[in-house]
Length: 365
Image 1 (cartoon, rainbow, N blue to C red):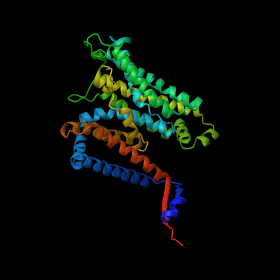
Image 2: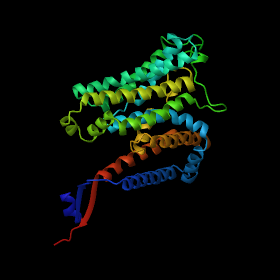
Image 3: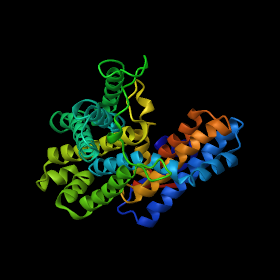
Image 4: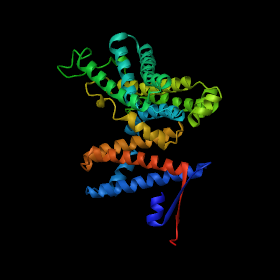
């Protein structure tokens, strides 16, 4: 900063903000999204793509309630799980893998454990074990962070790849279907294991209900319970939390278990409500929901109720991306740039939210 002042005659001053009003927070979020849209428009134009037509296509996709809601469900489940860990200042980047583990648990229940059980037994067991298996999977990096102080960003991210290869191994090896004629995938789960859908749509409503109830539950947990208070205190000031007697390991382990479990429920919904089988290509089960959910949680400002609306908006962007690929022959990578720039803008806005930056022109002597 001293060099900048000497060369350009500009004095840069950075001050930490003591308090941030809700209006300023909302305004900053709005501006960051507008900046991201402007940059995306420039990128689209550089590729010879009409930005206005592109944004219009994405907006029209939001009106396709059926398909968008199907995309919204896993985003909402993963994002509300991420809200609770992010509030605790614990960084779970492994929701994608946890989603796959939940799907693996559901497939195991439906294909091997109790395949002949009636739906009123089979479906609840799939959801319960999907939650438990994915929650336990998330406990591995949580324990490494809590007891060995190993960075959870790295461990959760790496465990995504373990989950990918586990699904690929099961679908092409021990679980390969007897009726798939050489394809690397499992048999279809039995009809009684499939989730009911709203008539005339593809919306598997049991998972939708679980997602919305889950969002309300997480909000109540964070705002009105002792554990929620401990999460918020530890997330804002770990040292003060320790001084107040809050158990650090308890906060890390429980928040990660809940976060992983909710992502696992999303995996159950994708398997039992959409795909009906595992394949050797895990991306056929999840369209990057675990990673996109990070953007949802940030856009919702870590509010699980707001995540309901934001999940729907992001679901519309995903559906719009597919529409752009077919109607305008736009590469999927261009759509990923859209999501990435929104996240980058939000991260940049966080700096402005926490710090006040001012410039002063220094007159040369």
